[in-house]
Structure formats: structure tokens, C-alpha cells
Amino acid sequence: MASSTYDGDIVAWANEQAQLLRTGLFSQLDIQHIAEEIEDVGKSEKRELASRMAVLLTHLLKFQHQPERQSKSWQRTIKERRNAIAICIKKTPSLKAELADTDWWSGVWSDTVAKASEETGLDDFPESCPWPIETILDAAWLPSPVSRAA
Image (cartoon, rainbow, N blue to C red; front, side, top):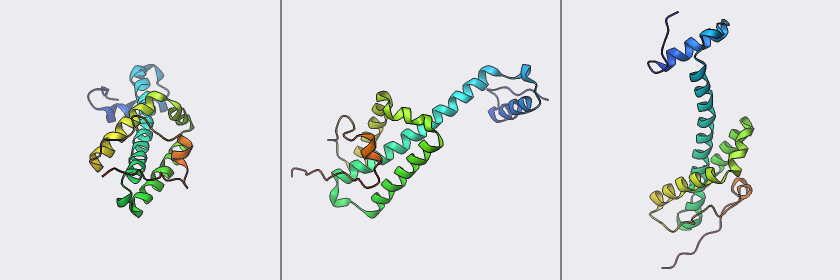
């Protein structure tokens, strides 16, 4: 079997490592890079959850701060993101820990505010998420409109 390098062709490397595992040639495995790839899978799942949460929160902010522009499309997106987050957590229950991590929330909220500002032209969003996670994920809840001074 030709030896692929991790940095040269990761797909060929991954296929080679899988074959080595299947044939029991454990001494030939690239353990360090396999460990890194396994950790990256977890990081990828966390990024996916953060991205889904930021989209949900962005739409909740838009819904709250632009009541005149509320649409069925926004409500559909809110519902879809909530469902996607629920599925993500059901598939990977350990991700629930992220929902209690203040550093994770800080990053998600920062992304949310940036997206909401870009999409609305507004810049007066709260410094931190004003809603508890239970409320955010509650299928029946939508934020009350914010009145804007003229």
C-alpha cells in the first residue's frame, strides 16, 4: 500500500488509515493525526450548532426589532432553526453542554449581533442574549416587538 501523507492528500490519508484499521495493522496507524481528526469532528459539530443558533437568534432579533417587516418566511426560518437545533442536540446529546457555556454563548451572540446589524442596519442590540435557552427553543414563543423612537 502506498503511503499517503496527512498534509499531502487528506482524503487518501483517511482512506489509508481506515484500511489499516480494518486490516488490524495498528502499528502503522498515524495515531497523532487520527486523534486530531477525531477532535475536529467534535469541533465541527459545535460550530454547526453555533451557526444554527446564530441564525435562529438573528431572526428572533429581526422579529423583535423590525415588527413592521415580520413575515411568514421569518416565522418559518425560526421554526426550521429550532427544529434543526433540536435534532442536532438529539443526535449529539453532549452538545447540550455548549448551551450552558458562557464563552460559547459569547461567540454565538457576537455572531448574532453582527448578522442582525448587517441585515437590518440597526446597531442597538443588547450586549448579551436577553432570553434564556428554554425560551429561545420554545416553539410557541416569539419576542415582543421593541418600540423605536422616531
